Image (tube, rainbow, N blue to C red; front, side):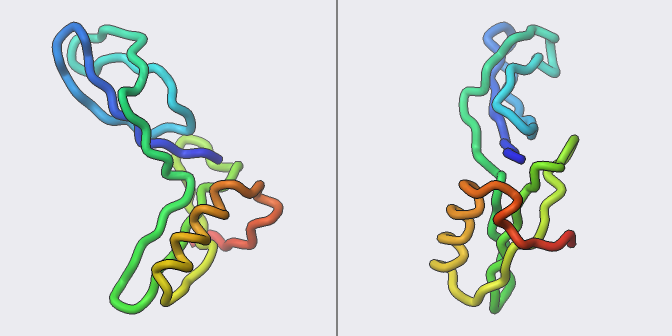
Length: 103
């Protein structure tokens, strides 16, 4: 499932906020309640890469995710370049092509 970090800015009171959701949907200002604000920016978090001292971990949000990304481990690699490539590929493939495990 797609997962996004959406950034918003309220035209009424100037409040800026972020919200993560499965789409780039409109939101309501948490400060004044003004509504129907589209994201000013959205970061696709459907696949992410985390690292420790030696390895890169590629996680994917599956289509079964609901109110959270429910990330699954796709792969572990010592190569940063390969991790970035796997992340790009994972964001384009349907779940049936991804062999991951819940962590």
